[in-house]
Each structure stands twice: as C-alpha cells, then as structure tokens.
Picture 1 (cartoon, each protein chain N blue to C red):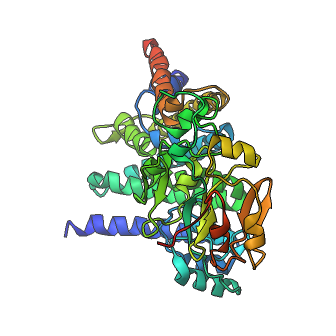
Picture 2 (picture 1 turned 180 degrees about the horizontal axis):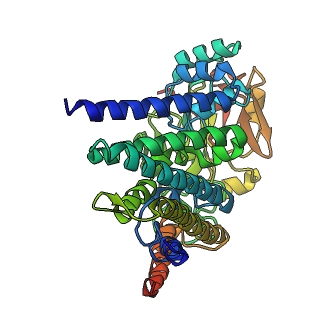
Length: 202
Length: 263
C-alpha cells in the first residue's frame, strides 16, 4: 500500500464519485437539511462520523465474524445493525451535548440509519477491498479512509447546496419555483458540474 | 445444525451492540420532565401539526414547559383536553365552537369602479388596485375562500357572496387566511347575530358605493339593552360575550347590515 493509492481513494470519493452528486446516494438529508449552512454542516459531520465508524466496524465484522463462519450472505443484515447502532449513539451524543442542533436536525438524524450512502460505503468497501474473499493489503486503512472521504464528499455537497439555498431565500423567485422545485434543478446542475471531475486521470 | 451458526452470530452481535447502547444511554442520560412522557401518552400521536408545533412530542414538551395551553390539541377534542389538563394540574376550558362568517353584505349590489377581466380569483384581483369593487373593504366575490375550503362547507350565492354551511364548517380558518380583504371571521355558534359589514368609511361613502353596509348611525347602540353593540370608526361591532340574540339591533338597522342566521 502506498500513499498515492490513499490520495486516489480520497479524490475519487470526494469529487469523481461523490456519493450524492455522482452516485445519487443519500439524497434525503441532502434535500431535507440543506436549508441553512449550520445544520447542514452538522449533518455532514454526523454522517461522516457514522460512515467512518461504520466502515471500520463493518470491516472487522466481515473479516473476523462473517468470513470465518462462512456466513458472508448475512452481510447486509449485520451491516445495517452496525449502522443503526452508530446512529443511535450519535443521536444520544447530539441530544446530550447540543439540544438546539438536535431539534434543527429533527427527523433527519435518526434517518441517517436508512441513509443509503452509509450502507453504500460499507458495501463498496467490501466490494473494492476484498478480492475473492481475501482482504487486499492494507484494506482496513483503505476502508477507513474511504469512509472518511465519502463523509467529506457528503459534507462538501450538502454545504455547497445549503450555501446556494440560503441565497435563494433572498431572491425574487417565481412563486411556482420556490422551495423544492428550484432545489431539484440546482441539485441536477451541481451533479452536472461534478460530472466534470469524471475526466480526471487517476 | 448449519442454521445455528448464523442465528447465534447475529444474536451475539445484537447482544453486544445492545449492551453497548445501554451503557452509552447511561453515560449520555439527560433528565427530562416526567410529564412529557405522560403527556405524549395522552396526545393522539398523529403528528398532524394543527397545534402549531412540529408534532406531538414537541407539543408535549411545550405543554410541560408551559408554552402551550391545555386546549392546544384541536383534533384531540375535549377528552384529550381534560386528560392534558389533569396531568398539568389545570382546568381545561370548554372549547367555544365557532363558525366562519362573512362580514360583508355587498356582493353584486356593491358598485364596481372598473371592469375587471383578469383571472377569477380574489387574490389576483386584489393585486390590481384592491379589486374592482368600489368599496375597498368589501367582498371581491370570486370565491377564493370557496376554492380553498377543504370541507366543501362554502359556496357562492346568487349575490356573488360566499355562504357557509354551518353543519360542514369546522372553523379550520383556511378561508380566513386566504381572504385578501380579511372579511371572514370566526363567530361563536351560540351567537346568531353579526354585523355584515367591515367598512370604516363614513356613512355617506358606504351609501354611495354599496348601500347595504354599516353607516355608523348608532341606532343599534341605543336599541341594545345589554350594552353589547358599539360603533367604533363608523362601524358597529357586537360583543359576542354580552349579546343575548334578542335581535333588537337587527330590527332597527336602516341598511339591514346586521344579519341573523334565524330562518
């Protein structure tokens, strides 16, 4: 394993294959919590934490529990279990430390459980860093980095979106376009813009 | 026997994670008002948002902190109000049943100041110099309230004025919100008399533009034996708490601007 591979994974997860704008995963909070920058950033951090820890724990669960027992077909169930536990943990911590943020995130905080971006990164790690049932060299670190980078990409996308939507609030917008319609159009334009990264030679 | 391995593995995983979460919940325990849980059990749990809070949880918290009244849950009705009041240690007020009422009698009989050919919608019409009616207070008559009523309780009569079906009206307030002239109000159903005019113009102006509105002559004021009607800004107003439905004011009104729902 060399550093260039890590850099490649980071750039790929943040820009080229951005989980929201290229893979279209986790759109629910992307639309739901992107009205203001502050809650959007907090959401990004929460998702990043869940993604990173889920990547680590799912790797351990897969490598040392599922594979030795020959029950890799339980991958989806056990990964969901891991993700749900971490979301619960995040919910408790946020509720204890920042009740205002807890209220601002509202239903979208427990909904991270069903955020397919989290499940997506866990499954993707599995597909990418295990070959024919054997982990690649340094696949643990690679999984961790990919989780972190995917979270960073999520945070980047939701931050950009919330910045744009904050400006929309001050604009003279046609009544029919206010709110969700213009948000969807913006999301698609952003997605097109991110498509430009696909030209990168990595 | 093969089936046992996945069952045991998953159960063990669940057990470990469950214990971990149980331990974490001890660390991150926050004190919450025990009333909140009790209130949450009493509230309908439909999270409809009629109370103005994000859901039943939010309302329960607001109730416990004293930010909401015991009668805040409208769909719950009096049973829920009573239970909520019991938990909070207060007495629930019986909800006064109200009905949407139009306080204008002009309609077709009120004069127009210009010919309006735009979309038949009160809100649109009002964007053009307050609509075509000469009376700037009166009903525009395109029935935006009828269109918005979710219960089908309103319809336009021959005089281009909305009428409310007292059986169907739930006093949800949607018509009141949409009316650009603010001439719909909630009247307690026990009160059968209301002033069907919202014009604070002087009597002469009202006669000229409509002829069916309140001219501020104060005949009703002297006719009322209960001090329940007063003229403020050239407009008679009934105090619904004092009114006894005796109809003396309606009988003396020279323009018949005081209406009753007696048949």
